[in-house]
Image 1: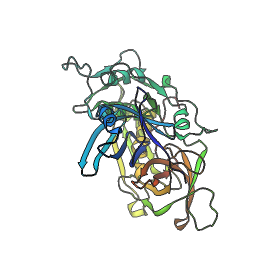
Image 2: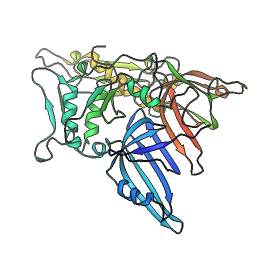
Image 3: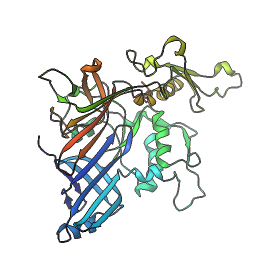
Image 4: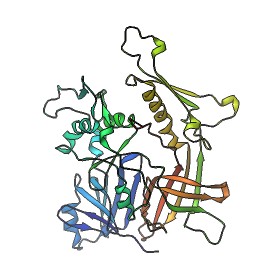
Length: 399
């Protein structure tokens, strides 16, 4: 098995790839991700001066695997350890959304008396315009915002898929009003707006903001699992395989009570109510499952922004679909970073997952992956799968 090459590239074309240890984590539900690399140098090593020059906190870098772009990173921490044998440089960080993930939602960095809020009297405005206002202080200008057309996964996995969802158009995503809650960060505000529209925020490999949602209609990209068969058509797990099935944080149904219409004749009976059962997420393997005496466990939410049954139903799906990512997971490890199908393991793709010892053989969604390189050069990938259809962000407007 060949060893993949990890590069940190800077704007001026400088690259570093002499790493002893590497960890690259990416998750479909985490726009920050995490990277860490380390290298040990002698005091006479010619790279020492360049490392000191480039490996600084706050620096932007591009991460590539065998020349395939993965993501834009922001160095968060640099740690240098000085010993008798030389110097160890350890660098870690995440995507540039780190700053807005921790920083407050503000309207104007030059006038903190202004509160970040949006309200349109006439009609809903494009959500892209709202996002630009939220992130403008952090990007220094209006960020580039794109709807997902599937090319991000195709590029970062190193191989195009022939079947994938149609492009997500930003025009169908609109918002009437929003206000930052006390103590809310910029990313939290953006995420709260987007998830109720049935989408989530990621950072594309080139630094653009990517509006996306899970694609369960795409083709299967890998076969992976545990099998006693001598011939297995894919990648094999090695070591422990963990299958976790829990009702913790799951509910038999979600009930969302919306806002009574602004009408003098409106009564409490006019209040829109949305109800979604756990079986609507996955009929064969519902996130919440129990015997009759424990079958009822509702979650009731009041949503002032939900003005009709469509919106309350969508929010109810969201309230079940987000925590469902923890209801049933298959976690395993494979050798290397590139699958036998020729694709880099990439969150947001589908795989046939086989665990013969637990009678599992089904299509599952790759929720997260972590690439590891040990100091001895050995490389492996930790994978977390969930059942197809589990991660639900509600309905797209107009669907």
